[in-house]
Amino acid sequence: MVLLLNDTVIKSFKSILGLQLRTIYGEIYYKKAQKKELSLT
Image 1 (spheres, helix red, strand yellow):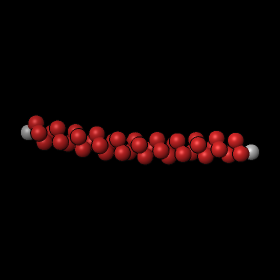
Image 2: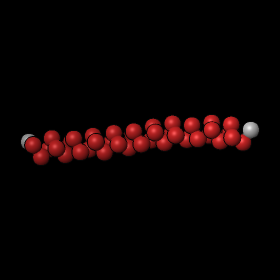
Image 3: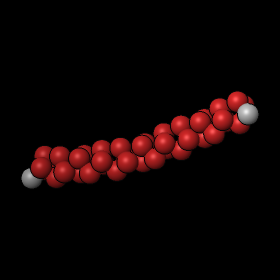
């Protein structure tokens, strides 16, 4: 029972963390891209 619960909790944590990391990396990448565009012009 504990193992099953831990597995589902870990999976949900991984999906939540994955989504958060994607949004954070997306924001960083977007900001870097904006900076590059500004430096080019």
